[in-house]
Length: 81
Image (cartoon, rainbow, N blue to C red; front, top):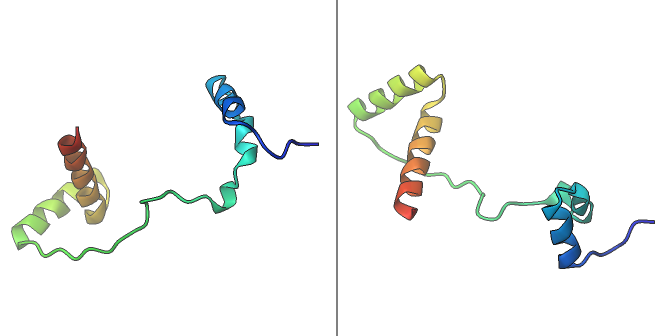
């Protein structure tokens, strides 16, 4: 029969050893990443800027939204470093 609880020390030991059995103690079906909720933002850009973003999106084979998200993420990583 499976144990119902695990101490933090037991979990850390399994984690450090690369033993994934500690995941049995988590409800992965209902797990949520905090701060990962989507928020809609409306952004007005000059035409030349939107066109440049679209060119880059075509070059990369991704959407305009993906280009903007990638660039914002890179900038935010730079300023928080």
